[in-house]
Length: 478
Image 1: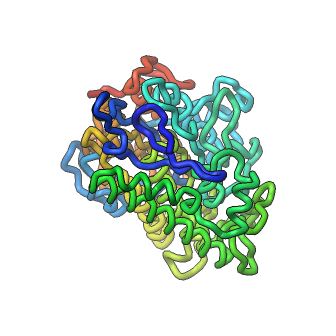
Image 2 (image 1 turned 30 degrees about the vertical axis):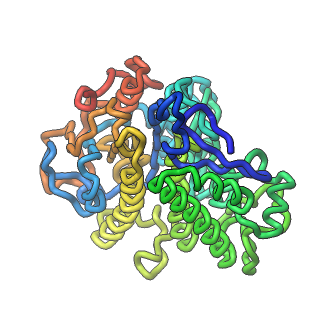
């Protein structure tokens, strides 16, 4: 067993580094007392493509007593730890001149506030997750295993418009270079729990023998268990059971021919010899089959939760789909339903109803993760969610018009108290009437000011971010 400073514990075996949750009794010493490292702050961005059915999203009143709407209903259990922002404008930054298309334009500047058009090779492009890393991974505590983690369900496929594909398929950027998504849960699992290159001989041998990652550290786990308090022993048991169950689910998913790296004829997704690289998804027209969308979503919710709980990383970007995503939502309707095609609603009531159902399912997935983070207690008695800043939005607002104003924005968490996220609905277009139109009004409040607020909440005192300016939003600052 090894420790890194005073907070994080790792169990090491052949080709494996298993991060453990915070266990105070394992770190107690008579000389130094309890662990002194404060719980780390974290950031997560969640991208939901193709806009949203705004009349079924927008609360009709501002303040803390707004009524739930059809799409926001899944957020009710954690509504005191969220903020919904209405009327934020991203039009001038997303669409200057003649962009590649509205989807790529909105995705390309999603977290960095620099246009795609005319700035394809701009070295100043840095996304908010990377801009926060010096603080998130600062010197106060040991660095996490992974500086940041990029995940996407749809993978490296789908429409790219006339711009380089990275503007449609990634969110995270550093000095003008995109950080590509992991799109296979098994690869993500190996990145999180296998030390070094997942193709090293020890990992390959473990796969060949179909041995669990836990098998490599089982003896250490049992030894550690004897030194823990009853509460920490229960926490360790819960964590190891979770890892075992997750491995089993990944294997079953592969046997069903669902995992992207698996054998479509039904072979296990853990082959005797791991290939050098997993093949691209390359689904027809970028259509992600419903079984992959459902199965991978559930696995990624677990992986992202444990990544924060075990301090494997403190910054995650997640894409349900790429720009112009055609993920198949047939599991909601019983018939084929490609998301982008549904979002081109032309005002039809049946398509808008389908879009609301898709949007509600997406929000339910986010709410499920947020609730789980809120149930994980830190050493200071607060939850992992309390120490997390969560941002959710889309490439534009309405899927038919492709407007980059009246943006749907959800915040959750609170940056360890650095942001005022307290259950409010903040409306920057108070003249908006209800029932509201599909396309709302424009305001003079840039969406990028949310990121400026995040920077200042983390002690990075700047009044601009990318090409966004105007300083922080006073309503979000404590």
